[in-house]
Image (cartoon, rainbow, N blue to C red; front, side, top):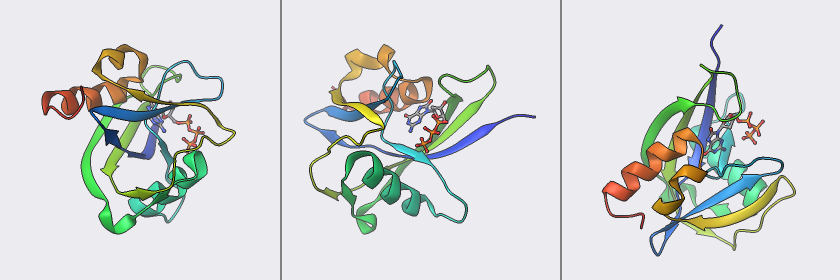
Length: 133
Ligand SMILES: Nc1nc2c([nH]c(=O)n2[C@H]2C[C@H](O)[C@@H](COP(=O)(O)OP(=O)(O)OP(=O)(O)O)O2)c(=O)[nH]1
């Protein structure tokens, strides 16, 4: 049996830095987002997860698909894969970490080795296109 996590993440850049989170008890940084619940669209998941994690309201009409990326899931057995469907989107509110989130940080490409494998692919693409410092 192979496992694939189906997640939706928010790509949010400001001044060449990307908003990233560290979940409670974890050592590497993730892009904010989470797993789809049954029946949810990508945007349903994005709006719910970003509200839960950061108390920020995503504007769904502004969301644009950035890319979908797959890699080894952080902290799971070899061969467990996470698929992350990534969106940019406008928002309202100031990111404020929920109790599940220990840290909210702005990272640059210099932090590539501090993020999960799937996020490294996202970092590479953003850096190549000049959006991530
Ligand atoms: N949200 C998120 N998860 C990631 C990223 N990169 C990455 O490997 N993951 C992995 C972590 C786990 O190996 C895998 C499944 O997530 P999980 O099992 O920790 O999810 P969870 O129960 O905390 O649920 P959820 O809140 O994320 O929906 O997704 C990322 O950038 N963002």
